[in-house]
Image 1: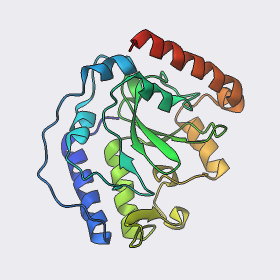
Image 2: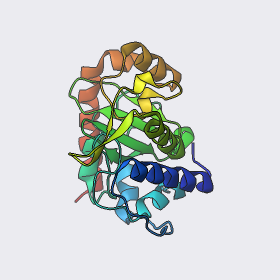
Image 3: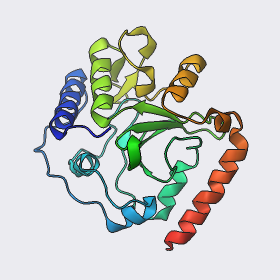
Length: 230
């Protein structure tokens, strides 16, 4: 879903406050107004609009470092068609595979923002592994995601490592009230993963035959890239 902008601003601000209190170097900077994505973004992802929630987040002047849990960083607006290669593991999703933008990159997991349709605004996650086939929703919205991370810091399961200067996720399952799928950890316990996939509309028949459908998606990505041109 698409957050109320006030709710989203508050959630991101509260995450930054919690992260800096934990030890992360993240100076406070004045909020920037929502900008506009490059024109090519619309062509890459086959959409005719980009939500304000996403354009606002991308407009914020964050330091160029790992500010998110488990070596996570916000990806910039894509500049070319090769951005579609990031979506090569998004099989079985209940929305067109192309209508999502790679947004947060972690050590071994990718989070995307759904750009259109009834799932617009949701955050989906994909383990970066050739045979994971674990398409699943990480959070119903950006604000929900940042709120989970803030609560994870408060619960002591997202901790600052002074040596690496990163926020790292410890045992997220030990803290009641936290959603393990909102945190960039892998693998996810099988029963929880499959239950969430069914809940959020993943086509389980496709997941069970993941290799074949991954090959089909790869062909679809190549065709989409060719249609975009250089």
